[in-house]
Length: 149
Image (tube, rainbow, N blue to C red; front, side, top):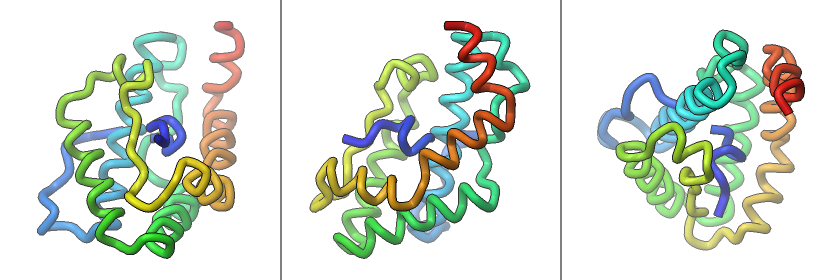
């Protein structure tokens, strides 16, 4: 299972219905929602992070990394299993709290046909964690988190 954190991943509102958005647009909406939820949880845990976390919205490097990841998943198993994964993420977001997200409750099931090793290979190949780390460093959040430990 990929952790929501690895996806990085927060919400300014729940996603629109599947018919109103493409699968990739739903993926972006849910990833942004997970990132926002994680930000909220981190601020609750470390108040000094308020105003020092990266915007949950995708910037160009984040969009590139997530597009790579999405395309990698689709290339391996097709769009239907990826769409099912996204539906599961949407369902989880409807009921998870920020603290549950922080405590690992935001675990995301890989699309059918993608093992944990496959998912890690795709995420690593797309430099998604590097993008998250760079954003956390640039925003000052990484330094604040290090000081809190």
